[in-house]
Image (cartoon, rainbow, N blue to C red):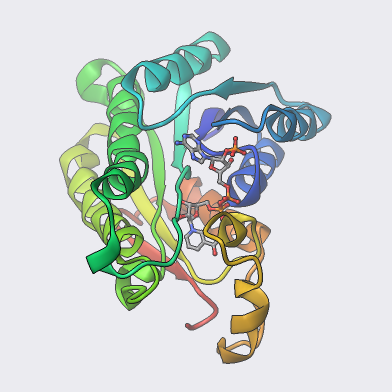
Length: 247
Ligand code: NAP
């Protein structure tokens, strides 16, 4: 099912890889980003080089007004058939007894509320209950949801565990309305997210402890996302697919 896909946080990392792969698979793609307009423009250029239409929309997924603007941009391109709830943040390593309320609110607002708001808008457009013709949603969980990230960022891990429950609950709510909802649970993937949490060497430091002795690539995660959105996954619903190299 092609059509229009929204990839939140599509300017860099896993989101960029997903945007480009979905364009390869025939989707027009709205690339949302928070601040890095140059990176978003590069992703859009890659989408357009594949012969698809692309649009970059700045916006914080944790802001309802911004989410509405992202979806309005998608409406201008055509029928929304896919949402990749990819935008997500980590924070500096801290124990729970050090965490400020500001930190906690930011973490849950972006990682959880943002995904809920985007899914809400997607369901309004895709659900047969609302006159839509169906679609697919893929949420980005994390291996941290299972491993807890104790001593590093349990708030992040908890937000991703919330994504797991959100995925199954939403999948059940809209299963009879033409929408499948799944999640991917990446392990250690080579993107800039680790540096954004103050740990630029995290991937290199962990490499030898990983079962496959290497990190994953954003493209490897994107392949799982694209499969979950595809008709090949037509009976896969409410699933959380580990893309962790066995971690
Ligand atoms: P990344 O390289 O840090 O990229 C983050 C992307 O999200 C960027 O496009 C960024 O936009 C955007 N973004 C950040 N905050 C946003 C907000 N409030 N609203 C909208 N967009 C926002 O991240 P990544 O590693 O690709 O991670 C993507 C997803 O996979 C996240 O949900 C993450 O938790 C999950 N994940 C990643 C790993 C990993 O090892 N990399 C492992 C497990 C799960 P700008 O470019 O404008 O800053």
